[in-house]
Image 1 (cartoon, rainbow, N blue to C red):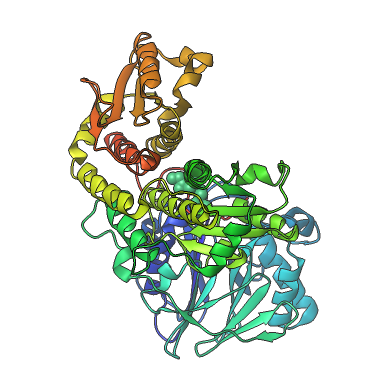
Image 2 (cartoon, protein in one colour):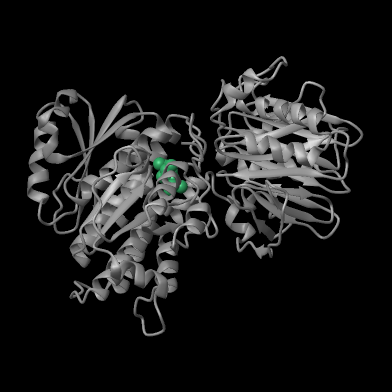
Length: 598
Ligand code: F6R
């Protein structure tokens, strides 16, 4: 949450920083700001999107050094005073920050200066000035300041008396240094922001600072010891992060799902067509007596499907936990637990907190993520990548289906390691899934009509299903509520009569999935129960289980893999419902991609 950019160069930094912030807007978009230094430091801040910030910066203002920020509010409402950058009282230091400082109130009491904002960030910059007055050395004061902070931070700081350096610091919040051609260097929360100027990046670890000049990037510990690190090439295709002709990233990303499944098949099979995982992953999974899946939001919903896959295919007991609960409510662990972290971004603070905890206990962890080199990937023993390409829309779509496909591959590998008989040819069935996805995506107008008919004017909606369908229903409800703001609930069909059916009244839309051969008759009974109470039914069934008035009939796929196709209608219906209600699909209110605060 929140995005940071910075640049030190010889030419105008303004346009690079604004373009970088636009690429980071998915991380938070309630307010934004930029500080540019040429002779003096000029700070511009605005509530709203980067477009609004662009508007208020006079054309003639630019600088060769700059820092920028796009905010997702944690301390204080979205407002100009609370927007970053923040400055120390004398104006000597200017700073942007992503993260949450836990001891800000304690530090604040030691600082005898007026505060202009409600943010923890202003506390950092004022503390910096205090330490500078005491120590007389900027770098030493910067290191001391960061040593005093408890919590998470990614920081970029300008010293108005020094046109040769930018100061960077990181702890538990993502930050990368981008290396230029010897005349400039940059810093950003995500490589995507600076692909416009470089594909060479330096990874930063927690508790490190960087002194960035035009020609060099010196990494140091908080004690001042210099560290050596080789750069890496960011393998992101610049075209992957553009919307192209699509109206929204979400639509583009939904459309990419068949190609992502094909990509996954390619990455996880050898020339004989057999599943092949890295040796390290094999060892981890073959040792485990129980799998503990830890994730949040959509990734948690993929985890629920993953549990079914691992238990039914591989026969290994599996639990699924919401990351933010796990740390405070840890279940009894078996002797050889394997922790499986599922995270599109690989940066989610709630999941990371659990990873840190289980590592302390000496347990092994495997991360399924879309982002190579992300925190959860670096800190786990092994990683399986989703190969989905950057996901930019806040509402996760292609990452969900990629997570399920990779979980199926993992389940197969565990099954093989344990000598289990494999129920079907997974790679062949995944190829069939990709073709089925193509055919669903080719019929978008049907889902646009369904959204118009069932959801455009609706206050609430229910998603029903049984077994795997009920997990996909949870994801459908999350998708709908987050982008259309319709109150939506997902329930196992049989559970409705134990309470929630009280909410069904004339016209309540109930969207039901019918794809599970062992429960399709039962769920039909549940549909009748809600229709008898006035609900309008929108039923999406699978070939062989269809009824005459179903809204859409999906081509048949292997029952264990149905979530990969049943979710597509729900994603599309949510998308078109949000459009029909004039909502900002890619940037829903109050949300941000990559939730880096606990
Ligand atoms: C919903 C959504 C969120 C994320 C959740 C976890 O569309 O995107 O619920 O799934 O914040 O994020 P990751 O997967 O990055 O850990």
